[in-house]
Length: 74
Image (tube, rainbow, N blue to C red; front, top):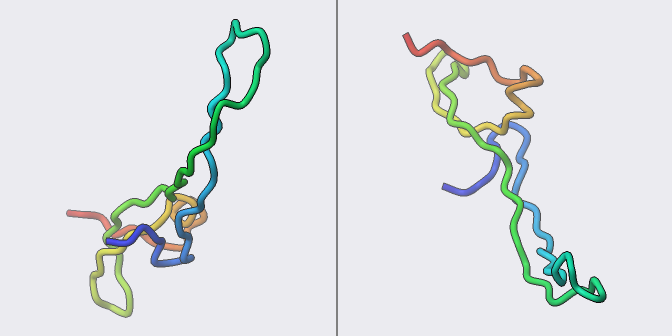
């Protein structure tokens, strides 16, 4: 399953993790940089689309904005 929202299309963004010298170091300097990945907060949701029940992966910002109506499980 790819990490993207099926409503708004939000995908992972990329950045760098910055390693710095310790708190008690003489100089606080950057020791190194490694790449990292920021994943969207995706939740599996059961909803109704065009009269049929569908299972989707939706980001929490879309759920909060009400772009998807959750269907009760029972």
